[in-house]
Amino acid sequence: MPALIVNKYEEENYPVEEPDPIEYIKIRMEEMGLKATDLVPYIGNKGNVSEVLNRKRGLSIEMIGNLHKDLVFH
Image 1: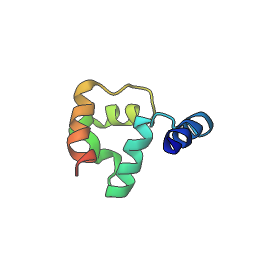
Image 2: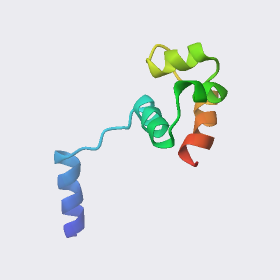
Image 3: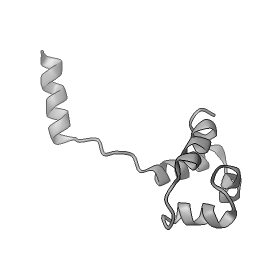
Image 4: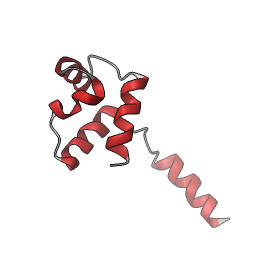
């Protein structure tokens, strides 16, 4: 029972926000020593990569799947 009270308190006072996918990609790029051009096989041409990283183009389901295979489970 005390764990439930602590959990409820944390949820109310310290909510965890949904992670931002673009920030996550940038963090993984840094961790893995990748440059934007390294994302071309996953996102498309350099223009698409730039637009995605600058939030001018959304991620498609295909892009997400491609990135997930190598950036999440690498």
